[in-house]
Length: 422
Image: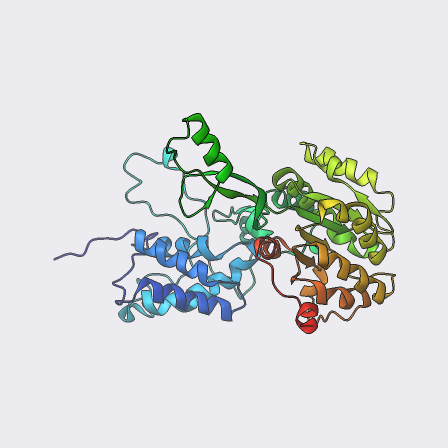
């Protein structure tokens, strides 16, 4: 019985061994990680789900399924192609075809071309014409034609800007990337814990407290006949969020992005926003403007000491005396965004942080220097303030800001200073 002819451009998968898709995806992710390509466990889970929903019928489909999941930039393609060829060649090529010129080509040997759009293909060609896939990296020299063709090739599977910037430190962003990052940071939703208000509202649940006053009023309206019992419960409300952002010279690589975070918090969580360098400036009203660019421009114009020195203790003292004791900081979640490089005496910083600790429900300190290898909070201002903080996060990237959001929404913990006092 004659064999069915297979087009030269199609690489049909032989029967794969009975391997679970989860095991296959995990093994391939491990191989990529060992080769230096970032591959998190959640991406392995995405690949396993993709292979389960759409089982690959040829080499191209398997290649593109893996590439869409794991490749996030053009620079990662050589490593990915090499690992894919090393992992799947032995599995996909029949042993009888090794060394046979008529056998299927090795993974990555096909030319990298853009597939012809479906609406431009001849009738009936969609079922027989496979997609083309990119080649593996070549170790030898390339001809000028090949180099020029590679420059003109289009990448079909690229990561979104959000994904590419997810783990990039704010200090490493270009000017255009900072603008895009500011837009992403404004979308972060910051939510504080819930507290019980002094105000109450009627309730129908008998487990709540009996509202004797409302019950008697209802009885009077019914002529003192048996009246239904009225219960009451205290209302829940979100705790106030207060952000104090350091805009001194040492924080300049991060202050622009942090200011966008403040603008989004003011607009979305009705937060109170302050910046400080040599003095404290309240920017809640300036950042409440709907237009983000106009809000940041007004905020920058209102802080004349931008990129100056750092008076950490003095700024916290002014916040407590002029705003905090009047109610802004009472029972609130206070977030301080600073590297702790202060000109003040560390004893003064500790004293003001102790005052803030007695007012605030929770203090979260954001220090972008924390992510540096071998970092230890030994700087005078940072070392003095840390014992009074409930959480200490880096916030140096978009991914790190998710840790900040979790720290803001968490419940209050016992600080090191309070633990020693007990």
